[in-house]
Length: 238
Image 1: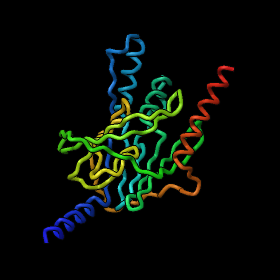
Image 2 (image 1 turned 180 degrees about the vertical axis):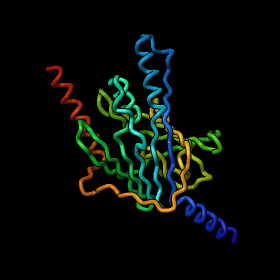
Image 3 (image 1 turned 90 degrees about the vertical axis):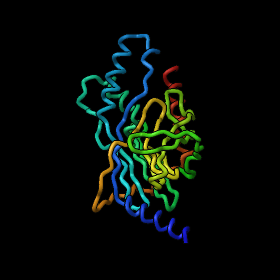
């Protein structure tokens, strides 16, 4: 009887979150003490100010979610260095789609100005730690996993950190941080931090699912990136 009541409460809670939008703000963890050049330090402070104006949206419709930029970084910014660094730090070209029922995760992005769709055959393998804290009104638990990042030297695997809320038992989150037993309230990707800022109630909420006809496997995608970066470096040296 108690088990049935628990299942009823769980399903009721999930239905209450079936159509909502979650707005995430962006911040940066920059070690200014390690920056010795004054002009670079000034540049990064301007970048951080730009990041604070950026927001992303996680749209949830039943068992599916779509995460992308809600407010684009100002293209009228006169300093292209600030603009390009801010874009890189927020991964602004990335759009993530997740179908929880089918464990299907897709990334839509651009590389060298070419649109690419990537299918991830495996979800992140999270390590849930015995570490809790409060973020706003949410009691959250720390989880970590590894992810591949694209840099000037090609693809490198680094640890990422998520703080999820088991009181909101939906396996969705920003930037493809999915599969945890609770909504991801805060996500850290290298020096960039995405934090839930507000929840918006939606009476009717629909979004177009991304095209799956031209997706490539994630392994093939990262191999392609490494190859392209290697070719570019070779062309510069020659």
